[in-house]
Amino acid sequence: MTVNAPEFIQVGEDNNARKIAIRHRDGKSPGLVWLGGYRSDMIGTKAEALDQWAEAQGHASCRHDYSGHGESGGEFIEGTISRWLEESLAVFDEKCAKGSHILVGSSMGGWVALRMVQELAKRGESHRLKALLLLAPAPDFPHELMKPHLSDDQKSQLQTRGYMEEPSEYSDEPNIFTKALFDDGDNNCIMEGMIETGCPVHIIQGMNDPDVPYQHAMKLVTHLPNENVSMTLVKDGDHRLSREQDIALLIRTVEALINA
Image (cartoon, rainbow, N blue to C red; front, top):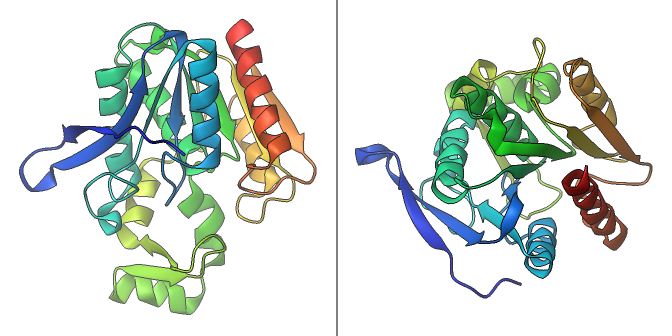
């Protein structure tokens, strides 16, 4: 477990300001940039393993908690993809200005990573990316994976309360999904046309994933027709992909992307 204290940057102004917790390590290029999943934090198993590997190999690494997550400020219920994207870009600009980087996005972090690619391209800064590594990526998950299966009660909760709850397999606390997350997610959909990354993309996906079916990752590939994309399917892999053999696969894939 990480023992060093995080540093903080402020993102947003006035009532929208929130402190974002960061752990950054200087080192050689390409650096590794961790983008966690929904309700995950930067000291999870995969993030820690990547940071330890980067330290051992002398590579730069950077990870942060989205607002409402982990050690960052802000309210979780105010979170949206646009908000977490803004924070991720701010951290990237603040701590990853030198050299090229590999964005490693887990679950929802894969969506954030792909949106970062689009925003960096608009700024003419695609050269800052060496590769993308997406772990059980969940782009457009409210629209693609949740809306088609919402019950009448859940739809009613979203309209009357502004949020819905569902049991979590990973916590005693229920998952909360807000109407704002759904509405903003629709504005950030990327699986509606061609996605251009300008760098290699590797996807690691468990075929026994109950949260993000492997067919979703395969559909994502169809939206990357002109990109250098490869995929590793883990037959017995779940959504977390945090077993010892999963971590070993993660590290081997990072090494291959660095040496490509």
